[in-house]
Structure formats: structure tokens, C-alpha cells
Length: 549
Image 1 (cartoon, helix red, strand yellow):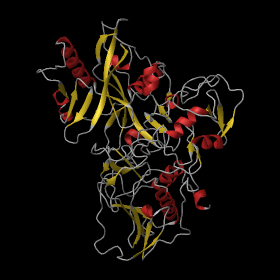
Image 2 (cartoon, one colour):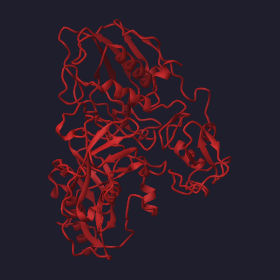
Image 3 (tube, rainbow, N blue to C red):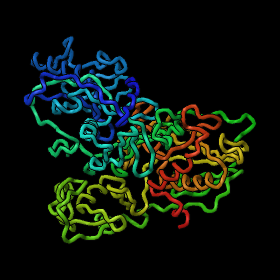
Image 4 (cartoon, rainbow, N blue to C red):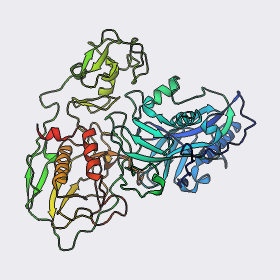
């Protein structure tokens, strides 16, 4: 959809407060209808108020005609009628499914009711700037949460309660990732209010709504993933709106846990190399954790201190999920009445996943404390979370993201090649350039992928990436080699650039794909890039300490 223009920050709170028109129909018998579509991570994304109102109008007409007939006696709704940019999409009224005609992608849609005096009822939109420089809406319940905090004159809002590790500062208009420090511009703006309708179902009052429908579709359980918005490392000055961005980093979310992870956008460019440079034609290979992920070292190799041979987490035989939970959690005999952030049930009561997680050795009310970070959860909740992931013998704390064990990903088969270019990068004129080439071919999805047995595509390969050949650049190279061996560089998901599903995409570890420019933000100079990618690798469990093992 077209990006909304940035909303100028107010003098007192960073956002101006637009006048909200009085709504005479804002009564207790009415609610606002928000139509939403479900993305690949099971999160519900709101359509714009104009599109949502059009869908509601078509649905109402269909009901009046006592059959699945929208305008024009059709059993489907063409979203292009409401927004020309959505012309590829249609909604089947009978199955409540959105279909993209040019790719065949199908999404579920639903109607959600919110109070008429909430943010969507007033036409208030909260948005974050994505990697293409466009404004993207928050999930509606996040929008309501932010609006409630803003209207209560809070200076900021912490989204931890929603399973998101972000802090939104209303004064500086910046969202900060509390794990990595990456920051993203946000805005609050006035749009057309969503359509009023009679209250025919549960009305969801806030982001912390405790109704069954909200809990089932929230990020508070291991069966769903929590969307992390991509971050840009903004200038340190709070007056960022008059500053140029130092780095445009193309990521698209972190899952609620490492399962199943969302993706970054694909590399946006394949830079032209110096015409005098030709990669060596001969190379040496050393084995990685398997022949599918071996790293090829060329005849002009980058000097490294070690080669990382990673053994699969379950190489010694299958590990029972209960053993993994017991290994990293200590029993808590007298838990408090605080809520478990996974199931949202009190810790001194049974886990909300008692029915979903069958266990012979873990009781429904068993509570455990993670040994390093000390966060406390129902043991059955942690078991359900583990069973929904890669089952690689590792756990990640859903609160602070501390990793226990060795985290591995679902990167498909491929090859990583490393070359040395006798040419410097902008901002690193004192050294040569490390040239990384990733090659992955199309194939068939396996266990741990979104659709096992279904083909996946691999667009834009080989992908060329660049690092300065200095001490910190060589450190990043070693960490990337380890991340590649652990299958963490790429994953299979949905491209946020093209919308194509079941394709190989970047996986939260940013790479520079421009060598001689920074036109798209994926190049040099970028003085913060090496520190940023080291922090991202550490968040994946790949740190300098791993190289010493």
C-alpha cells in the first residue's frame, strides 16, 4: 500500500495530537469492525480503514441477499476496487480466504470488533517505518496499547507485555529494540475511522485482552510467533527527523522465539565488481557440519585462526524434549501468583498448555526457573515451545532471549565462498575487501520448514556480500562462517520485497550487498555496521566466545 507521509512531531510529546472528530454513534451498542489478514507467522494484520470498510460493505450486502454474493453478484471481493495497489488480491466470501492471483498465495481473513472509542474507532493509526522507507501499521492490538499509553500522557510505552522486546519513546518518536539497540522511526497519524457495526461478538478492548480468541492468536504461546519489526540504527540525536539515516538494515521480524523464524528481505542489489578483479577459479574445501553446508576457501584465502566444525545437536542420538526442558530449568517448589508469559495463566496454577503438551514426567502445575537468566515459566509451556521448534536441543528464554545450548536454524543446502579483493570499501580505505558469495539452489522443503515436501525457490543467487579486511571485519567473517555452519544465515519464508512465499530469504543477520555505494542502504560507508552485525549474531547465539571453544 502507499506509504503515508511522516507525521510532524509535536513540541511536547514528539507527536502532534490531531483533533478527533466527534462521533455521534459512539454508543455502548456499537463497535468498530476491523478486517484483518493472517500473515505467514500467524499474526493478524489490519487492512486500511478504507479497504476494511469496503470488505464490511460487501459482507453486509452478501448477508442481505442471503447468500455469498457481494456487489455485482459475485462470491468474491476484489480489493482493487478499494485500493488499486491491491488489485492482485481477491477475498472468497464463503471460505474467508484472501487469494493473490499472480502468485497463488492464500491467506485467511477475519473480522475483529473493537470498542468504538478505541484507536481504530477514532481513526488513529500507529505505524513504523520499514526498510523500504514506507510506513507499516502495527498490529491493531499494539496500536490500541500505544494509543492508550499516549492518551494517558505517558512519555513512552514498553511492549514487553505483548511479547515484543521494544520500547517506544513518544518524545523522540523512536522504537528501540531492547536486545540489540536498533531503532526505528514511528508515527501517529489520523486516518478515516473504521466502520461502526452492532456488537455481535466479543469486543477486544486492549492489547492485553484476556478473551480466548485474543490469547489463541497472540504471541503469548509457543504455537504462534511474535512479529519483530525491522530496525534501523538511527542517529543518536533525538532530533532524528532532521538527520540522515546512517544505516538501512533490511530485516523483517524476529519470531516470538527461534521457532519458526520470520525473514529478512532478499538482497536488493548485486554490485558490479571492479572489472580487473576475477574470483580465483580454484578453491579448497573443508567439511562443515555436513556436506550440504561446507564452506569453500578459495586459493587466495582470508586468513582465519580456526575452522568451525559444528556437530549436530542430536548427533549422539535423539534427545527427548522433556530431557531438554529438565536440563535447563530448575524446579520451583512454591511459585508466585504472577502470570506465566507463555500461557498467561498464573504460575501457581496449571499450565495453559496442559492439553496440548502430553508428558509422563512433567506435571501440569510444574514450574521451572531457567538456570542462567532466572526467568520462571510453566515447564509444560516450555515443553510446548520446544516441540514447536527445531528440536535441536536448545532453548531460548521467551523473556530475555538468552540461549541455552547451541541454536541451529533451517537454512537449506548451499555453499559459502570467500575471496579477497585488492580494493577498499568506502569508509575503509586502509584495507582490502572480503568478498563473500552465497549460493543456494531451489529444492524441496524438509522438516522444520513452513511446508515440508513443497518446493522452494531461491531468487537472486549467488548473493555477493562485502566486509572490510581489517581486524573487526575478519572477526565478523569468522562469526558468519559459524552462523552458516549452524544454518542461521538464510531460511525459507515469505519475501517482504516481492510477497513470494516458500522462497529463500535472509534470516535476521544483515549483510552488505553493495560494494562501491550505499544507494539502497545495503552498502558502505556505514560506521555502525560491524558492531550491529556482531550484536545480531550474538542474539542468535553466535558470539566471540563460541570461537574459543
